[in-house]
Length: 184
Image (tube, rainbow, N blue to C red; front, side, top):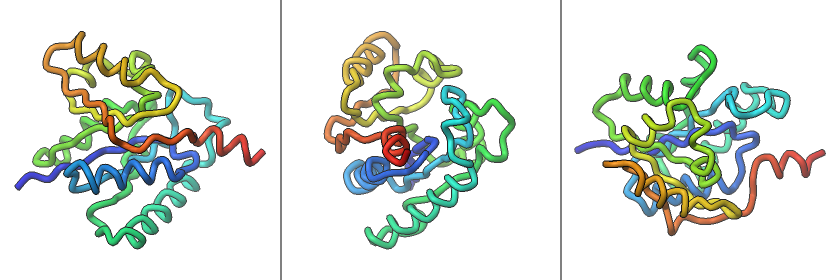
């Protein structure tokens, strides 16, 4: 029996209920065996001064994941946290991390999970065409983005693409940036 793991990359600066609800949705509704949060210490598309210390974000993410496990009767194998990018040289790109994860566990079916905001800017990502054409990607909706349209366009433009829009996933009008601005 194969294991299916959703890789949920992010800065998680901070992690919030939108992130948590997507993870729960994937486990409860999409036949996913594991959701693995991959903390990005430094997103190449974000300003470093906007990021909380990476180790603090990792500690917060681990604490939140522990709470998700307890509150939802999940196992520690269903929701995990990876610090793989802490061991990689910079710049850290999703494509490079994905390749490393797959090489370490080639028997697992990995799915990259991204927000609708990211599919609308995917062409800014390192190796974006390779990501779209060689890896399975699921996009969860984000309020205020033309994410569904972007998915349709990419699905139409590329042959044998494995891009799926999660139409029924919960939609929240919240972002980590908004939460940081509220604290100031």
